[in-house]
Length: 601
Image (cartoon, rainbow, N blue to C red; front, side):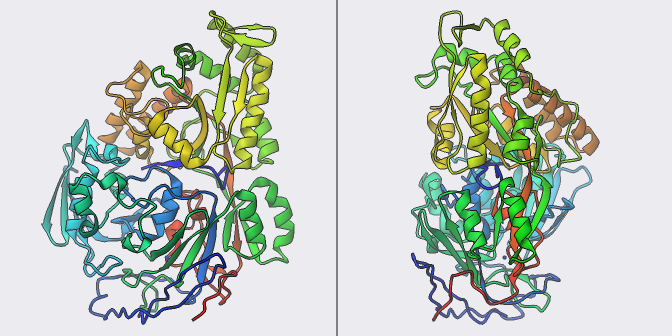
């Protein structure tokens, strides 16, 4: 499953007790003992790892936006994933470097010879963070919720074949069988995206028809129950989210003690990216996503400083601008909708964008023009032969003229005299993306197009996309991933994140129907080489029709304190926790420094 990201950082883990933290404006903690003792017998099926580290301490990181929900199933944006991510585990883990799947809440799985029956064997002894046992009941319940058409969910499209749901059943307390209508090429990738939530906490709300509003940000953190390395104990909107170790966590360090190494952590919510960098330089946070303008200065200081810099290479996400292709409404009049729906208009806009200028000025060379939905970082599926819209304002003008737009007195108008004006909405708090939008604004002026750049709060912007559809043009991004089908909720015409015109009963255009067919065919194509061919054809269509006008792919630049051990961040998923989400349970602090957050009794 892929979700919206704000691009706010890079463009955009023997317990004798638990340290309970409560965080206020001073950033302090209070320590309260919690008597949770798990015996060796209770942990006999826990996952042993080779990780070594120092016990204790607390991580501190930052973000520029509040979450919209704490509900993993209804989440559609990275700001929420960053909040609840440390609280939950998956049935399987995917290594972000090898892309191989490894056991997690499921210790193993089997596949039938025809590829249609998959059986998952769950780990014994796992408990939710409130001490309630984790069983097959929770998996079945989560699938019931995901398949409920009344529930807002982005994973449903991954778990159907031609509209038919998978059959799922509980064989016993620790075994779940999934039967597919037909073989699925990337089944493990799709099923690994399933968010498993506790039945005993959420079943009543689901049966009452209130699941979509359950575990909202007003929920007391103590009521958010997970099975990941940490528990949430405090959320102060606009200030911070505080976590402590989950005493029931199911992974073990090399010495046989329960992970995570650290007692907890804090995500500070700050006004903007500049504040994030300043806090890192002041030694108040442990890692940070960097802007290109930070790199040279910080590199000079790194040797004498407390940190090291990492360039993780091109990101896996996609940055874009998009026009509202929904049916005409009060937000977008019919004449403008017709203009936005013109492929030639969108291509003209793409030719008018000087991506090389954006790469060299905004990103100081740490970026490359982006021509496809799939990043060049994805060397398996990326299609290098998609159309490229190199900066060509003369061609842009010619294309605009070909669809009846005429420039009069410096203003581009249609045949009925409507002046072409566009309001572009980027997320606020992200200087690089706003600057990019300003460059696009300036490049459209000679064509006679008056563009207004109006930054919006990220969560409010997502609300416009998913609710009111009150927008003309947006600048946003998606997280990306290895398996292109993970973006089915974006590219299927029926998808809830089909940004330009979501939730279509039938494809509105021939090209959307073609993409639907490609995704549906790829979904049941087992041979990877055949899936690659299909998804390369998808990229050709998408890069020709341009419902998303791609911008640039920045390198992922991060700063990490020297004090952080076992640090191996990944560019895949770097929009959440600077690529550290996959290893939150085994990173550690080499000293007892608390980043300005002091533990005290």
